[in-house]
Image 1 (cartoon, rainbow, N blue to C red):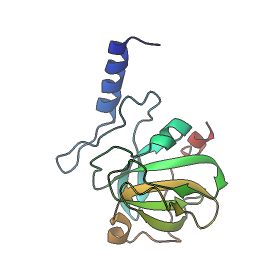
Image 2: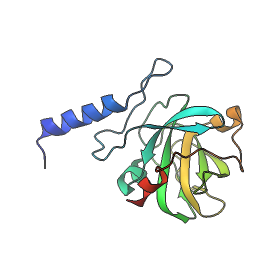
Image 3: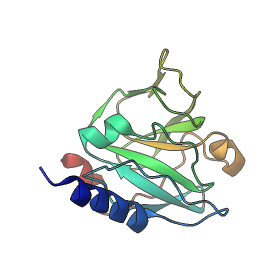
Image 4: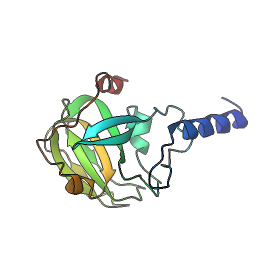
Length: 163
């Protein structure tokens, strides 16, 4: 166990290292996530989207909970080690979201919508999914992302979900 000041310093360093600009706001990062993964970029519907990765059980459990802001071209990519039917809910999530279920090759299965603080019913993949991408509500409609489209997943990124 590290001393509180060391933990606080590490949390601040992670927050500063992961901050990106946009619309005059800095994205809010998870508080003191000890296993935080640095942001990456994806090509989604012809746009560059800055994403945080959720590859461990702890990161996937926390997701985008407790945040009050998500930059316009930002999101979170949940990567799992296998293909399974996925259900997502909005427990403690304050931002309305588009929830995009993806196959292992980045093909969009379906786009669903998550309402803030709604846990039941959850939103589901149409078939077993390897990844889930969360973006601000309306992003997919605004940029034309729809089932059958592909999200470009950088080589090696999928392997991060094997932890």
